[in-house]
Length: 388
Image (cartoon, rainbow, N blue to C red; front, side, top):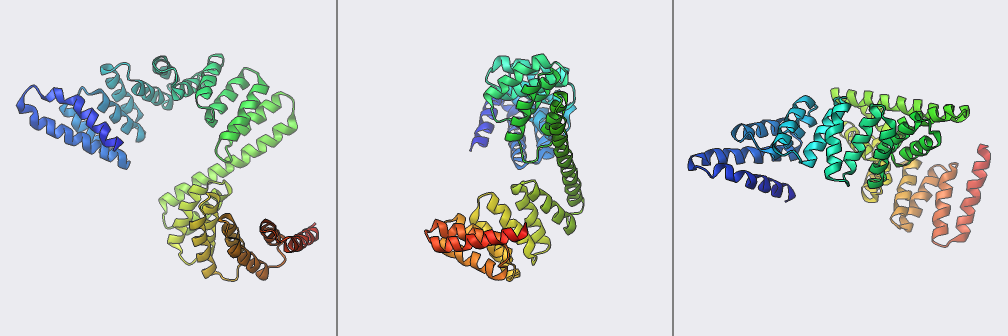
């Protein structure tokens, strides 16, 4: 509804252009059709078709600031940034204080590495809207790129005051402080970037390693640099496998490797997609269903996780770990009876795995059966002592 309301507003703005003469009514009709098609294609993610439709509309009514802005955004989505810049500039010539068009222009310049050019439109954004967190964020990043660290600090601080969980902004602020030789502040911001960032976010660890090195703490510096290198390797492998699966969509080995990697990275939403593709290519592989179950479990979706775990068990009924996973899922739902049955089956198949006994002990503890809880906890402790 919101999307079509946007279209209706935009079209109503254009109506006076075509009210001058009845002979323009057919042009108006074609213009409306092109704009509607452009928005539909945009919402479908078909930017190429959206570009064609918006360009056709502008051929009829070339001076429409909003459509020029949307056209620029479509070009930007296709990484045609110079064309995007030209459309944004045309839009702003018609509507100079359009905050979002100014912001889009600043972002396009930033992505083109034209950081000096991005400053003016982004400064205008925050002048018009002092609460525009994204404007402060990209302006601060541009200032860091230009090595104007003293100016960048307050801008990035303002961005974080408005949007306090932005990992990338903490990282840029850490870089600003690092270059200003304010190492404790740099460390604080790199750590916040890690806290709020995606799992295994590499770049802040490099910043931490550099800051600790300059403070003379070589041990901490070495540890952070090792983490950075490990995460960089994982990222490179992720990029390699992603390209490989894109170029060879039926390459099961590549999909399997990608599934393992995204689970390691705790990217569970992506893992669901990858395991589903693995199952499409090899529908009788219990390992893929188990992986899908674990991914759903970590996303806190127990019902589809249970369904996937049961499919894995049907394919591989004598694998203890599958029952352990199923037991954990039933426990998540508060279904103690089925959870106990599943954990007992896991122990029946592999009584030497200590964590199966620990899981059953905790479950019995939760339902108040102290005797069985203690019994399985003693077994857990004994098995763990054997592994030392």
